Length: 112
Length: 176
Image 1 (cartoon, chains in turn red, orange):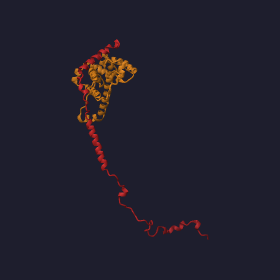
Image 2: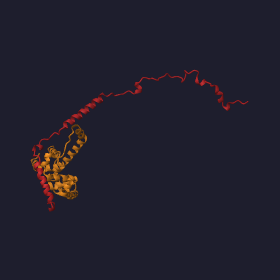
Image 3: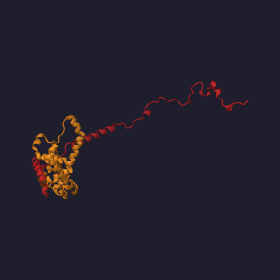
């Protein structure tokens, strides 16, 4: 039981209720008997299946082993083993400059 | 489905539509969809009354939950596709009633709906359930899945706020 002071609200809500009742859709008992298939549900399954098939085809045809670039390219700077700078004439180690005497170590200087 | 349940649903159908209409902010098309989906849940036995509460409060709880589901779905679609469709077609779904429909809706009912829309959702819900559906506060708490103390607080605050909004002076000032 509502207090009397709420009668103003009760009247307003009762009026709204009456208006909504006139607009309410008719009762359809068949709604309770016939489960409805949600529209678009089959489409979602078809789309998901198609995606899986495309992914499977892509993975099947993908090359299994990709050779490394260093293995795939021919050797460009390959050289036979040998002494470094062997072809240089005269040999670098035997070269003597004219000013080499200036580099004589004092310890090697001969005592007069 | 059992005949007794079908009879109860038929008796509650107009009030159930009124509750769905409130849950959908007065959008008739969405309210019909929500109510239809709620009936579908019953037909598929996804929702079953366990007898812990009255049939009416349980059924209104199902409708409320279905409306929230529908709202989330609608918001998701609008966020992803709505903008794209809006750009492609240049039109959008307008939840407000058409001008012809506006003429049909009684001015007092429209004013009540406008005022309820300005209240917090919980306050508007409890006022609808108590005054429109004639439920007790305990039954309203069952429908809303909140405690009786919380419902009482929403009820008192909602009443005071609704009265303020429904006063003619403040209503016309708000329109200006």
